[in-house]
Image 1 (cartoon, rainbow, N blue to C red):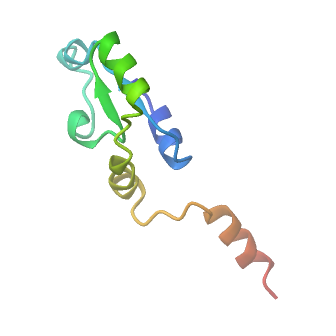
Image 2 (cartoon, rainbow, N blue to C red):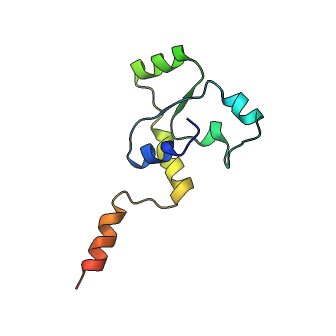
Image 3 (cartoon, helix red, strand yellow):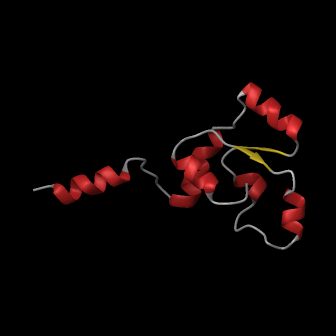
Length: 92
């Protein structure tokens, strides 16, 4: 998936596998990315259905890439930021 849904799943700390069977075609159409897709996505990239199935079976999601991705997108990320803002507003 080349959309922003990977950002949503990363914030929710859900495992992600990116099924990029057409990545080279997508890049060659000059649509491009604002970051190096292969280096920065918050999960494992697979290019064919066999690798997708294997990654799911093995639970190989590359979760360690999520924190780096969140820092790139949001800086210091606080997962409960809405509650912190509400608490601040409601303080006496």
